[in-house]
Amino acid sequence: MPLVEVVIPVGGEPLERVRAATDAVLRGTEADVRVNLLGPWEELDDARVPPLADPRLDLRLIAATYRGEPRVRLVTEPVAAFPAPFLLELPAAHQLARDRIRHLVELADHHQVGLIRAGTTEPLLLWRTAAVRRAELVRAPGESLEDAVAAVHGRRDESLTTGRRRPTPSTAEVGGVRSLLRAAVMVGRLGLRRMTVR
Image: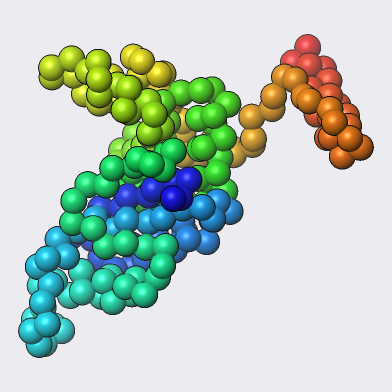
């Protein structure tokens, strides 16, 4: 079970865009992910078609590129995140920075929200699985899932251009020399931040 299920819709997308988005996820600092390429894979068959006349050429090339990759699945239906703790809906237009997924998960945990929405046009959405399951129980008729999750567990909007500095906690547990050193560094950072705020 991965920490994050990543879903990238690929219908009608060119190979280069899908490969850039998928490879960026696979090369990221958060290795505990699984990429689900959502597309009409059932339309592919073994019939020989001249490449220049193949209307599904990009889809065929995407399938061939990732069929042997253990962290990538070709799926034809929307993916349920459970039992993974998070699900990331990622448009193929986004090529994420190496630490972006880890940063989004840290933000969700730090602020204890059920949904992180990043970007405005074609936003990426990080859903907390527990929040989605709870929201589905109380969701009103006609209410969007985003609104339901925001109501029961909170939502945070992020810019894709903002820095990816880790949230700084306000307290630290000390246990052993390494923890003491970490706590000293954190206290120093908090002191500097307070000085700059003044």
